[in-house]
Length: 452
Ligand SMILES: Cc1ncc(COP(=O)(O)O)c(C=O)c1O
Image 1: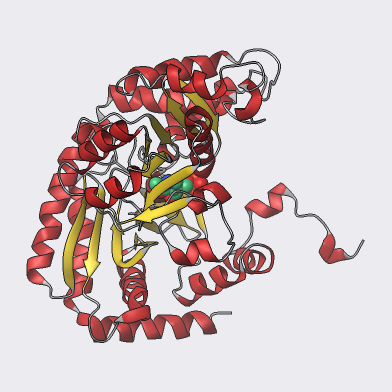
Image 2 (image 1 turned 180 degrees about the vertical axis):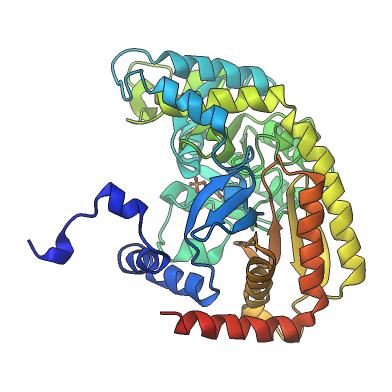
C-alpha cells in the first residue's frame, strides 16, 4: 500500500488544520465548492458549535444566521437532545425484525401535533427521501401518474424530488427524469385549476412558504384554494414542510397560518435537531392503507435505517422541548421583531429591495440592477456575506434558487439582543455601498488565494 493511501484515523481527522481540511475536501468531495468557499475566505474550520454560535480554531465566535437551512431550530448541538440520543443508544441500533418502541411512540407524537387525520408515518433519513415516500404514496393510492409542482420549489436532489424541482438548472443536468411532471407558477390558482381538471394528477407538491425560492410567502388564500381544487379533482395535496416545519414560520407548522390540512406532509431537518438525520412523510390511515395496506405492498416503504432508535430519540426530545419552551411562539415574536428592524434597513438603504418571508424564515432581497445584474446577481450576495463574516463574525448565505436574497434564518432560540447585533452589522455593511463592498471583497479574495 502506498503511504498516501493509508486510512485517516478518527483522531487525526478530528485534528486537521484548516488548510488540510480544505485540501481533502477539494480532492475527495467537491472541487468547485472548495474553490468557491476559498475565494470568499469562508472555508472556515469550525471546531465547536453551541446555541446560535460557531467557534473557529482560534476560539473566535461567529453568529450563525443559516441554522443548517432550517435544520437547527433549537440551535447547534442541543444538550438535552444529545443526552436522549446517547440514552437510546443502549437499544439495538438497527433492528429489522421486531419492534423498536421509539418508532411507534414518535408516530403517535407526530399524529398528535399534526392537524386532522395525519396519523401514519413513513420514516426516512433525509428530506428528499420523505419526498420520494410521499410521491410513492400518492401514486400507489390514487393510481394516477402525474405530479404538479411549482417554479421556485425545492424538494431535494433524488430522482423523484428532482422531477418536481422548480429549477431548470437542477433538473436538466441529470435528465431525463420522471415523466408526467408539470411545473406551474407558485401562488397562481388559475394555473393549478387548469392542470388539475383533466383528473390525471396524483399529487400537487408545494411548500407553504418557499424556502430556497427565496423565502416567498404565497398570496393570502392560496393554500386554502389549492386544497379545495385538489379535493374537487381527486388530487392529493402534499405540503413539503421540511424547511418550514417545527416553528420556523412562527407556528409549529406553516400550514397552521392558513388552517389548511394536506393529505400528506413531509418533515425533516429540525425534526432531529440536526443531531441525527431523520425524515418522515405522514398521511392519513385511509390513504396509507390504499397505498400499502396489503401483504404484497407493506414492505415497499421500508429502509434499513428508517426510524432507528437514535433518530427517533432525537425527534421525540426535540418535539418535547419545542412544546415545553413554546418555541414556535418565541419564533413568531422574534420574527416580527426582526422583520420590523429589517424593514427599517429597507427604508434606509437603496441596496435593499424587499424584505421577504415570515417568522424566522426571512430574506433580504438586494437591489442588483446595474453593476450586479443578470447572471452575476449572486456575486453581490457573496460580497455582503464575506463582509458580514470577516468584519462582524456573522455567518449567512443566500437562498439557492434566488441568489440575490440573503438568508436571515437563525436558530429559533435567538434573542432580541442577537437580532439587534445582526441587523446593526448588516446596516454597517450596506452603508458602505456596492463599490466599497466589491473592493473589500476583491481584497479578501486575493488574500485568500495567496493564503497558502
Ligand atoms: C423544502 C425542502 N424540501 C426538501 C429538502 C431536501 O432535504 P434534504 O437536503 O435533506 O434531502 C429541502 C432541503 O433544503 C427543503 O428545504
